[in-house]
Amino acid sequence: MKKKFDWLLVLDIVAGVGMVVATGLVFFYAPMEATMGNVQRVFYFHVANAWVGMLAFTLAMISGIIYLRNKRPVWDIVGLASVEVGMVFMLIAIVTGSIWARPIWNTWWTWDPRLTTTTIMELVFASYLLLRQGIEEPERRARFGAVYAIIGFLSVPLTFFSIRIFRTIHPVVVGANEAGAQGAFDMTPKMGLTFAVSLIAFTILFAALTWHRIRLGKRAAAVEEQKMRLAQ
Image (cartoon, rainbow, N blue to C red; front, side, top):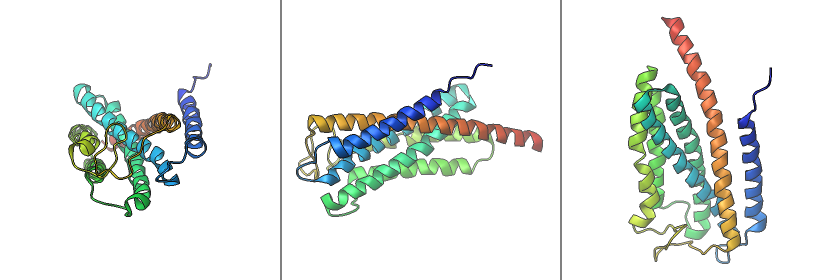
């Protein structure tokens, strides 16, 4: 019997190579920023993690819509996987942001609109997991989870546009900065290339981790279904 080609293994390898290349570019290719020094290098990881976190929550919202339309359990699994993986990336974004803020803003944390909305977004999707834990019946859990993911997604555009809507000291990565933005800088071509590679590498890593989590979710769903059959 011919062995099935493992696309997930290929994705894992590409993700691993991408992360090595991105890390190498961050520390050995991108020039040191003149004002902030080496701490600016955190920017490449911070923004990439934040991007992936928002991408994950967007996928959870899309999965929720599809689930409500066709009621296929696989989309509930995709939504759950996206939220769990996305929360990890977003937490890393918050931590790396604090590491960058300490020497630049002279504080680990400030209730700036971007930081506040990011924290709210993380808590919103943490509540998604708590909601699911409180519902035992699979179909009802999936339905409530889908609706919550769709509503919770409102925190994503709010977070993304917060630095353009509110007065903030957080720098804008792409576009004009507020006059009070602290830590803003212009990217050189080498910085721009490193930034782009980092975004791509973290996106591929997200795809690989989510795929793994979906596979695990399918097996967990099969076990849960078998338990319910035996309990009847």
